[in-house]
Length: 144
Image (tube, rainbow, N blue to C red):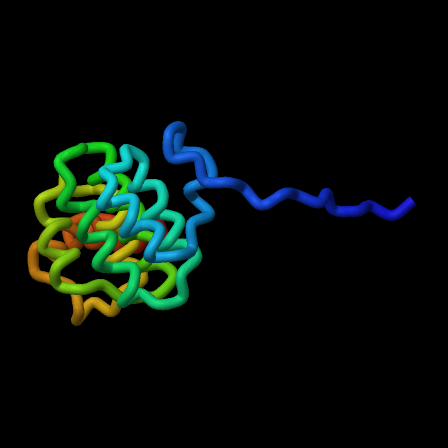
């Protein structure tokens, strides 16, 4: 008997518990959640970053999450920015300015450095990333 993939029901977004929000694809849904002050809106921003094809639509919502006073929502904005960098290879100045206020060594730092053209990255990210890159390069050269 051949294997059949299970048929799944579309996940319903549960704003109270935060389930199903990773599947959000509509920017209007995220905007409405920000207006309502939903606690789990950061998860929806990550979902938007994963599923929406236009980074110029995603980045303002990422910036809004990075501006939040809630640390969890700021972290979710950082994760969403990492996904935008990885999937779309771009970032905007506002998100970079807001990212600078976050602790270094986060997900977005590494993905921006890996996927966005370096000429688009600010000096402070270069200063953070170059010592580690130089150390890695020297250790690899020494081993081989």
